[in-house]
Length: 187
Image 1: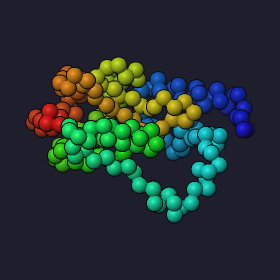
Image 2: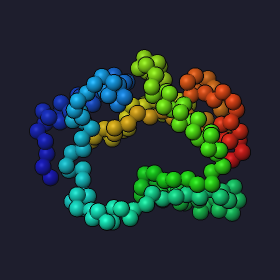
Image 3: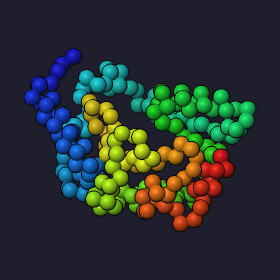
């Protein structure tokens, strides 16, 4: 394995640290007019296996994101569905959910709300910033992969007791009606 010079690794780490401390995220970089992807977003060659580069295009075209059908989740299929979610998350890192019973307008409203959150001024978003994951609202400008940063910004809301507390939802993400509450409570 070929290593990078220590000075370059330090510079990369310092760039990433400055990026994380700015709390401005990828959108902040784009809004600032960057013309080149910062080095800490580029995965070092040693993070890829030799098989990654030689993957056959035909095989890649045949790969399908796992689909999880939630039909019957509250009854006889619960264990099967939980196992399928775990397997998909571990092997793919993502999956598609069908038969979730969340109405399409509610899903579209959630997507719009997240887009509106990310389009806010940086100072407004920074007020919600958290990387520790212990709060109910987490706005994170990256993941915890220190070899290379992910080209994304994330906002997540967690309500472990099932009760949605609007205090922990940015105003721009709140629904004007109770459609999300109804969808969550029906599941």
